[in-house]
Each structure stands twice: as structure tokens, then as C-alpha cells.
Image 1: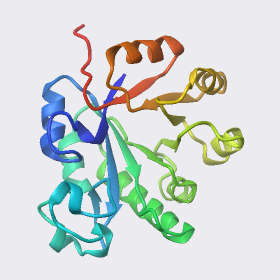
Image 2: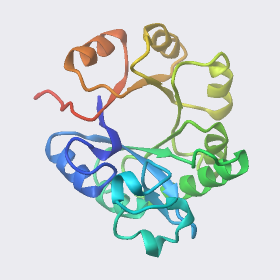
Image 3: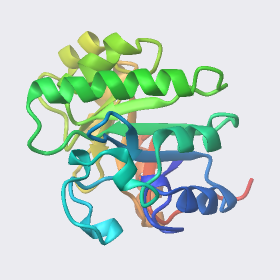
Image 4: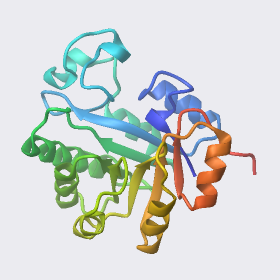
Length: 226
């Protein structure tokens, strides 16, 4: 499976509904995006802590109330309205600010997971929650135990089996720039899904599929015609 990274960054501005719509028209059926919280608790889609790179504004996004962010970045609610009625796979990466302490990471995990569960409550395809943050995933597991969860890692840490069991993970997402063949085999042996980020070269994609990767996050690849 190919997953459109940041909703399809090759087809439109990253983490926007414009990119999502264009990637969907190109044949993508799975999508990933980054989710943050505004100062007044509204989940919205943005990768960076700062607004500058993608919006031209300046300052920390999470320090602003939603009214001062709209309409430059979409809300999680807007994405759900576009995706939830269809059989589309959506991976929501819970993206706490880089300097967030464990308590704040957990708070974001709890609130974003609860919002996702509510917004996708009637969808035939529940969203997958993921994060680099273990506190966020732990809180998400409590807030929305029915939603699947995956841990983002550059490579498998020594305690990955214990974390997978404690958090009831369905998969682990690994960096494709590293040699992950042994990690993929280890994950599959444990019944976990292995997804790799980010793969834009067709030859590399073929190698990872041959190695057993379940899915690849991509900014450029499209599914082969069936």
C-alpha cells in the first residue's frame, strides 16, 4: 500500500485538503497527516511547530487560538468530513511541539484521539493514530482504545516489543533511509505491521515490498493500475 505523505505533498500544499483531493484523484486511497492543537483546543493539520514555512506567517502555531489560524490550515474536522464517509485509510500523526514535556504530549494525545474517535465514529474505516511520542500514544490508548495505534521510530529501539505489548500497537513506522530488512522481519514475526517513510523512488519501493513492508509513505509515487 502507498500512503500519501502529508496528504499528498507532491499534489498540493502539504497537509491541505487541496493536496488530499488531488492525491485522491491520482489514485491514492491512503493518507497521512500531522495533527496539532491550537491554544483553544482545536485539532488542526500542520507539520512544523512554527507557521513560517508553510503559511508565510510567523510564530508558534499551537500558541494561537483557532480563529487566528483559519483559513490557512485545515482542521481535523474538515479532513474527517472529506475522508470519513469513504473507505479511505487515514493515518493521523499526533505531533506535539518539539519542546513539549511528557504531560503536554499526553494531553495532546488524549484530546486528539478523542476528537478522532468522535469525528470518525460512523466511518467504515477508522483512522490509524501514530506518534513519535510514547506519552501521546499511551494517552491515546486510554482515550480511544478502539482506534489502532502505531509508533514512529527511526529504527527499532531495544524495548520495542515491550512498548508494542503495553500500548497494544498494530504496527511500527520506520525510516526508509536506514537498512530495515531485519526490523521488518522481526515486526512481522510478532504480528505487527511495518510501514516505512518516506519512499519516492520506484526501485526502492519495489525493494521494500520484496522485503515485506506492509505500506510505504510517499510524496510522489502513485499506485500501479490494476
